[in-house]
Length: 231
Image (cartoon, rainbow, N blue to C red):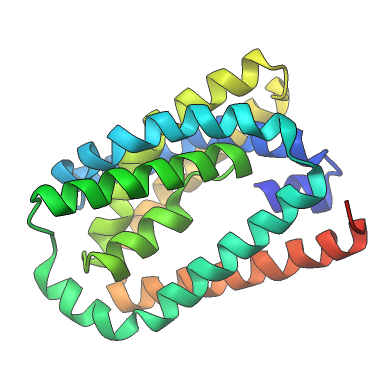
């Protein structure tokens, strides 16, 4: 949503990030339902991640006001490219992960999940993303979760995290309400369709599609960041 609003609609970077994370609430909520019904949500992992992500969402929304538009775009590009590379390099680990499906949640795993949640929640709120570009690579490649479970778990965390971020952004006057509603309505349909499609595909196919999309987005945003000049 951020690249579309910034590159196509001409929305200011800060406003695009805030509006995007608000619209994501509806899209993620619609998408998580089919995953939950399919059993593709790791509740224990999601709960652990949520401990950190809610705090991160608040921090990110507060930080966005002090970061320039150009640096927001640059951070977005770096994060997306890093996530794409990690997904591609994790192809070999994916096979083992798809056999395991879930992670045994011990103390070390919980601490790792909380740290991921704090990091991703901050970036999600700061950059106007749902957090999936951090959660999914971390869970699938880092913790060897099945790709479907990684995506379902990510969506389960995104919903409450995005709600917290959108409240802080709205109070700061950064959210375009009408645009957020329109995007949210489209996101509900897209979320349901995307979730049903994802569940019908093999995990390795999902990984490669996910990585490819991230590369395309990052290249478009990188071109815009270069055009904006130094700040």
